[in-house]
Amino acid sequence: GFVGSPGGFGGSTSSMGPLAALAEGWSAQQSRFWVWVQEHLGGVLEGFALIAASSYLMLLCGYLLMTYIVGSLMYFQRSLVVAAMVKAANDRTEFFATVYSFSAVVICGLQLLATGRLLRFLGITLSLSAMPLVCMLGILGVGVQPSTTTVAMAEILRKVVGYSMVRPAREVLYTVVTREEKYKAKLSIDSVVQRLGDTVAAAVFEVLDVQMHLGLSGVAVAGAALCLVWIVWAVRLGRRHALLSSHSSARLIKA
Image (tube, rainbow, N blue to C red; front, side, top):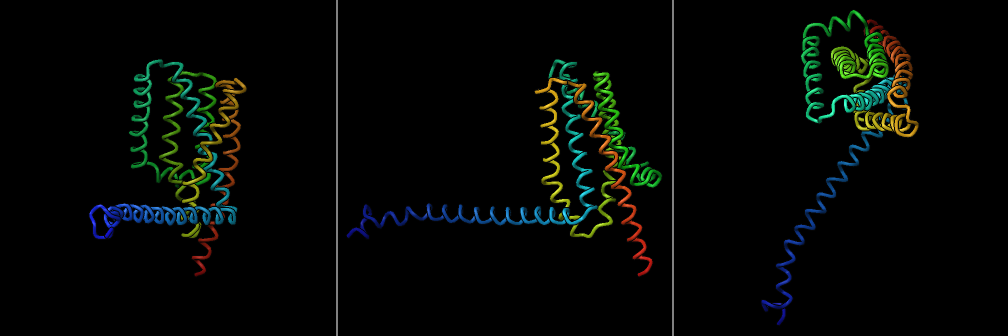
């Protein structure tokens, strides 16, 4: 009959083996993918719930959002200037490589020798405020005097202050929250807030430069205004951290 014959329907059973295995493997991959999505999406949503329930985490989230928005605006601004001043792509690459290499050397030296002393001397509030102040000076400087020298100075100063002072200060901000708030809120911030900041900056740049044709001056004014808001936000965040830190110390003394 058909079942035992080589050319009958029985031959299709062996040919379905690889297809069945492939389908089973695909199903397993889909299952793992959806488990991964649910775990990560659930963590992000839990993080945002924690942020929404904490005014301190809201301040921290807002500070980081301003960091990403202004940082992206500065990127667009310096890209325009360097593209206009340095025509060859290889020369532009060499220019930025030199700037970043010099910044890295200075940052490494400061982190090894001065970061701890600077944080203790300035405190968290002044350390957090240093970044928007430096960015405001850099944005206005490039807007008033658009040159590769101004861009290099602004970028080096921004990176040095950011990596040697502000990033360590930002890590200290998480010392007054619970372990759950720290890790779940950071997951949400790293996953969504940074991309949101980049998107907002791109939209602002599109409106100012492309649609309104305000050019570098418009970007400089908008960036400086954002930096002023950022400074106020940094002061509020620093003061709130000091308050929570004092409460934590008082509880430890009573314990």
